[in-house]
Image 1: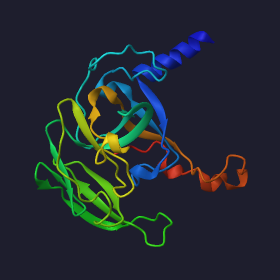
Image 2 (image 1 turned 30 degrees about the vertical axis):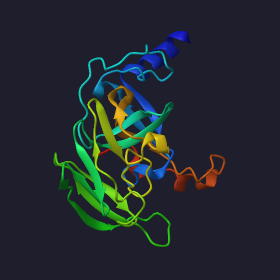
Image 3 (image 1 turned 120 degrees about the vertical axis):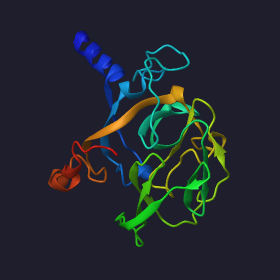
Image 4 (image 1 turned 120 degrees about the horizontal axis):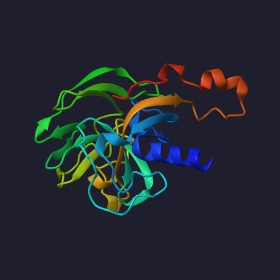
Length: 231
């Protein structure tokens, strides 16, 4: 039994670890109830790599490679490292990031987006769905209620060395780097806090359906999302 537990712990520290998505901040890429797998070796190993806190307290990363703009990343919240977040990497060290009129600017250039329809979220007025293209050519979908929401106009953020700027794909419903840690947000994320790159969805279940409600299981499990790649 101890050998089995030790093997599982080693795998979850060195190779990969599952995470559950608890909020809609990454809709439409990730849905509430998605169980995703994060690759630990993608960015090397830091002090938060162990799922039960066995790593020593040190600065920097072992065998680390820098993440790429557009990666969906699992990280520890800087103001509360016991909390795990999942967001998309938007700003690299030295970048100048700003929102103006609901549009994202990176280093003074507007990030292109194209409308592709609406996102069915059950609300009376469904939010708009866009495809956004980052400077490195990577594309991903985002959801916008409008271009005049609370965090659609921000000051310019200059990302410090060894830090990253994270945003949710559900732009008007995401607590991310646009909000300072002192104000209850995420702020800049140190490289030490990176845990894993989110690669695939293992399982997806609508949490609104209770486990004991067996009759609703066919509607609860989102079979089309099984083993889907996270872009």
